[in-house]
Structure formats: structure tokens, C-alpha cells
Length: 141
Image (cartoon, rainbow, N blue to C red):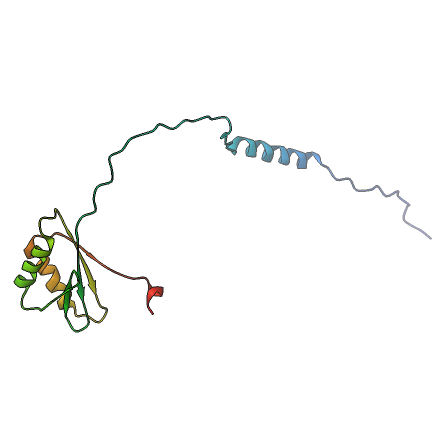
């Protein structure tokens, strides 16, 4: 005995209307927020300029300091006596150059005092532009 009535089964339907609504909203959002590049439409002729030649680089005074505290000023060995003598040597090397730059190349094992001596001598000589030479980590051999 069959107590259940035979019902006809209906196939499930997928409603595409909400999916289409969401896609249209996304499409409108993308159209509004997209920027368009129009390089082909712009014909630009850039102006020409005759500039003055580049300024000359300032005079560079290279001061090298090795691990034993010896000083090398522009490839000339300098025997350390005091900061005043080092200042006189820096003035002599600078000559009449306007605002020379003192480049300090100190060995990694050089003492801090050796570097401070050069900085003090540069101050006494009136040289205010000081920089330090460095190397990248991979450059060591």
C-alpha cells in the first residue's frame, strides 16, 4: 500500500536576474573608476632651451687614514704633529678654490681620534664641507 501520492517533480530553476544585476553594478563601477590614457591624441612639441654649461665641480681634497693612523692628503703622506699643522696642509692643498670639499677615506680599523683630528683640522682651516667615503658590502675583496 502506497500512502504517498505520486507528485510530479519539478526541475529546479536558477534565477539569473540577481546575478545580472550584480554584474551590471560591477560593470558600471569599473567604467566610472577607469582612467583612460590618450597618448595618441596629444601631439606635444616640447620647448627647447639653451642652458648655461654645468657648474664646475668643487675642489675635492682627499684625506686618507690607514689603520696605523697615517694620513695621506691628495696622494702625499703627511706626518702627524698636531691639528694646526694638518690645518695648514689642508689650506695649502685647497689653495684658492672656493668651498672645497674634504673627503675623508678612513680605514675600518682606523681610530675615531684620527678621523676627529682631520675634522678638527678642517674646521681650523675654514673648510666646512666634509664628507666620508664608503663602499658597499659586496665591494670588499
